[in-house]
Length: 144
Ligand code: RB5
Image (cartoon, rainbow, N blue to C red; front, side):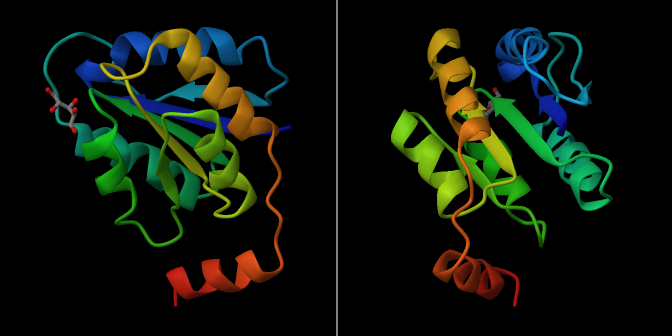
């Protein structure tokens, strides 16, 4: 079973709440919401940092980050060595980012992706399996 951490800014708050509710229907060991918790304006890098640090400290296996577009929060997440964050908008990239890139953070836009689509993308990502092999060689080069 996996441990998942969630984070968002105010632009991703509403979608994050829906994601949390959805994940509770799946067989996760834990789902931890690291904020933000209100609609007050906050800075997305702070929540990317909380989620990425949790994964790098091995307190969690996977993370989901949401901001208005998913762009800023994915940029920040990918500055951490060992984090492979993928901003996705469709099921093909949601599947590929696990199968080929072993993305350990999925990024979504609360203002760009509707809730039903976002939950489908999350299920696609969680249900996909990293293929390893030549793809592992490439991942090794990311962190070299
Ligand atoms: C906040 O207004 C917005 O800029 C942020 O959520 C995100 O879209 C940045 O990439």
